[in-house]
Image 1: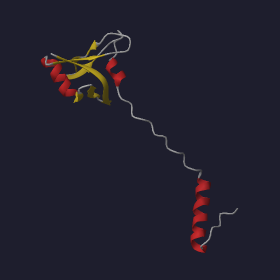
Image 2: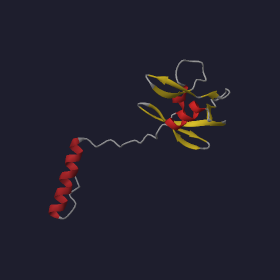
Image 3: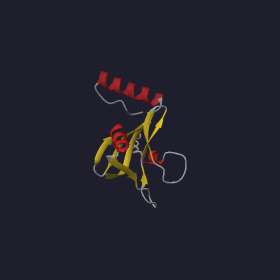
Image 4: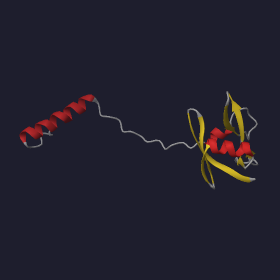
Length: 118
């Protein structure tokens, strides 16, 4: 049986959707089928502990991936979820500034020169 170490996972509101290993990227359904059939084993190498096996469990008739390396009841596999980089959006200037800028631009277009001196 081939053993894969999971490095990252991708998730959405429904749970784990994609698994990233050193060997490549697989969707969660493929990983669940491989684990259930016994073709491949998956594990998570958590910092400071030995690799924890990833299991396929059933909940409400739907299989999902589960790993637990800290002894809690929660699914630690979610801790490996990739977080998208946060992009900051500059704040819009106050309404009064935007109106003034629009007025200055309109006057410049009408009179052909910059009336920005106030």
